[in-house]
Image (tube, rainbow, N blue to C red):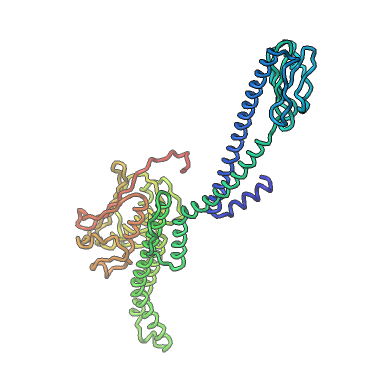
Length: 471
């Protein structure tokens, strides 16, 4: 792109939409006026030419009639009045006669001479330029010819052109004014929308919906922004609830941890740690501290996972869900050696994020392990049912009360019977979020062994060939 064109492009991009609409309207009118001007000039010129030719033919026929009646040498030629058409008689010998006082016409052309000699009946010809010349019509008459001529005058076209130019300038100015007015009226909803958006940005008030006005694209834009504000309100409300719930859940373990730590510090400063705390009590206290730190670590990790929502750098791939389930069961056994997991899995391929799915399965196994008696394993089954991969995790515990089922996947919700057990109340909430993100569903029922049965349904995927890479 050349430098002037680049500067023009940058200038155009810096203009407001109102200015652009004004320039476009004025340019469109200017182009229309220019085209109309050219067409009108052409039509006017043709009309004037046709009128002049017809007039010359009529004058020549009158003069030819008189010449045939009186003879070319005797036909009367009144003195030139000072304006109007010009005439001339061409005699057989090639000489000419003109009215007294008439301006001299150009010499008789060879073509006109041939008409006078009888080679053709008539001839229309132009001499000189359109603005400084003559239009001459030659008509055979008797033994010679007669001619009628007029001076080519472009003044009428020029006057018409200047008039059209003046009208065009007025139209361009009017078009710019109309374009500015239309742009201002058409963009008024955009201005109000901008002001409302600026107000929301300054006040942080997401509850102030923008009035739905205008039509077509403007209305769709306003509705889209209102939907965005509603989504932001929901997100902020969810963040506030998460922070409030997290503060509430962190209060108890942090208080217990602080009290135990302060007790140890105080006894150590007094030098009575060994005497005040027998070895058994000290071991129990240190174990409590370790358990509280582990619980806080788990809670912090789960809060981080929930706060991230569906945002993840992990890519989606086609994977065998059986591998994910086996890996999650192995991790559960390593974290809680007393837990026993009975696996019954078949290969089922799904499209998903491996780490997120493994976290969900691990939470299901951990939750079942809390309730399953020591002599009863946690049952984990994976199979394919039609277009779905079905994962079931059950235990032989007391099961979930009917009153707790509607809230079992809520954040930080813990049934009364579970408050004495370790946990944050976030595990099943994370499970539901991961399953929802993968287009599946999770339900709760009672297992055949009397405990809880949690079922996860995920859309199955077609296994890719070994030599193909995931897209």
